[in-house]
Image (tube, rainbow over all chains, first blue to last red; front, side, top):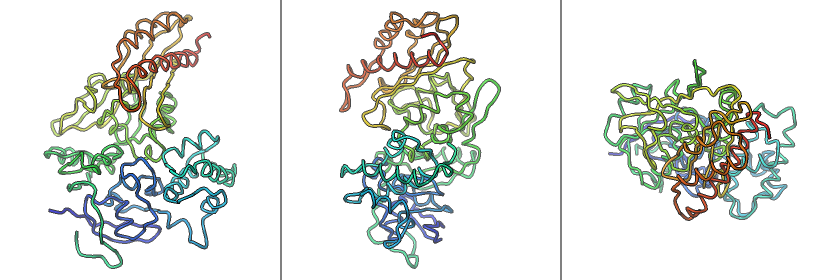
Length: 164
Length: 302
């Protein structure tokens, strides 16, 4: 007996109704059902952070979330950040600082950074590095990712820093 | 799966977890009723459960999602202490003003619990029910003399943390029981705290971690509490070391005696990350730091 549920989920602003198997992971729903392969699947055990997306605006591991849990929710993926010829400011900073080599970890880093920039002061490099510690880059590109995020923090401006 | 929805693809979608039925709990009675089924499991933050499900180490018949049960994640100041709803996220504890005021050690310790994205989902109730031998929450609730309220269709009961944590990944929870709240008694005014942890990478499970609270009274330590994690089957209190510190000035001789007493009672594991001897040594070093920090925050003389 294959258990399914009908869900309504808004991905990158587009609402859709889908019938999903109960055990389908949100990461596999995004990639397999919707064809949004920007969300990468690395370890599938919550360690690497490559599959990070926003669920109702909060960063989550999509490999540790069931698609059915996104019923009624807003999901944002890397595809919603910018277009190939119109990158988001954060993506532009990743390009400027060469914050990627192979790019596998990049979607997860970007979505994590979007959440961090909204919710955390990121007042020191130590805090910034610790905040990013849940995303793994295997190309040893972490230093440039730290620089890109630091530039994004600076661009955010002191008045935009949310209260901790 | 049901018939194809226009505009979607369904080719080659791998299913990682073994089949289960998903049940979205509407309220607590509904969750407890569903939990009475054989092999049912609760899904809270899912940050430990879902990796186990993905590896098929866990094959529940029913997964009961409690994330939308209203009120289960509430924080409240009550007479004599605070009540933390079991569904409270680590990130909420990290930033809540109520927690910072009542037990600042919790606000700080949360920064050692995995990473921000994990803390957005992971819950105190889930962490306690999972009882990983190197997790922070079991140690913190033990340190602060916490008590857990467990509920089932049969009723509710209150279990002290020291009785709840029975072994590695083992607790006093019956199959049909659920942690619904954690009560932490207020610490006396002037309580200082110390927390020290070493992990191989920031956010990893602790190789060893120590929490301490104490007061300074007439130049001496009063009401010392010391708890450790990562160095045994489950989190533990260092009762002998607490007795050594109580009523004493924390000079080098007294602290050394307390550290020796801590190392005496530890039975750490040897694994890929560290040897038992290293963990025992590390626990002592971290305990000395945590005692020093707690004494300073309690306003004790240097």
